[in-house]
Image 1 (cartoon, one colour):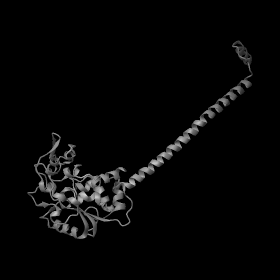
Image 2 (cartoon, rainbow, N blue to C red):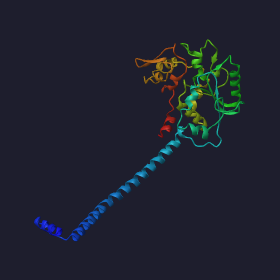
Image 3 (cartoon, one colour):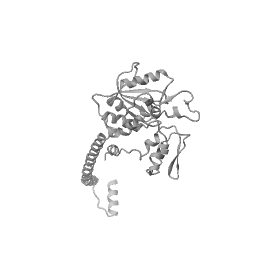
Image 4 (cartoon, rainbow, N blue to C red):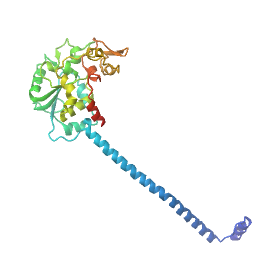
Length: 314
């Protein structure tokens, strides 16, 4: 009865009445045709997608290889294992330990630097060793107090047992705030006599800064390992320096028409002893602690163009 009603309804609507079995078969056939057509249309798209993914993967691989090559050529990333690792010691005199903390901020290469490139053989807080061993490089942080007999004796021993002695930071290089403090900072010069380490021993190179920046510490250590004397030349020139002042900028840069007014020296000064006045640095001698940061950071005092090109892969 229901089949008859369906046929009558289809006839009334102008549709050819078909048995239910044939109708179901037609629907299944139509679905299969639609599915086949969709698959036929999507197959080229899938193949194109696979080809594009393969090309992108190949391009990424090439870029990775290129970046790796550039990194190998950059001194900041030259972290290949050294067969005969140089022995380095860290000696702390009178200072705030800011330079040692700055060294640890080289997160990207610190672990490789300390494990694969150098061997830390001496340090009050780094190595459990009382007797000072032979060292290739000694990083001496802080000025030396003349009234501290132990410090003076230790500094003399450092010179005897080290191939190279580096004044690590401005306190070691010039005495910095321990020598020229103002406004009640500790330690005040009236308490004891603090002098640069170069007043007592021969210094081979110096890393200025209050504190020295993480980047320059890492670059100097890597340059020492690689024997890159061109990059180290400014640090070698500073080895005999026991006095640095903001007035050096006036004498060596501003007065020689070299100042570009970039303001880098002002940003580098830790005590705000410099300010820009009419596009040029103005020096306040009462605030200056003679750390040498202003002169060191000024791009007109030294500009290692070749090293910068290596770092940028140019």
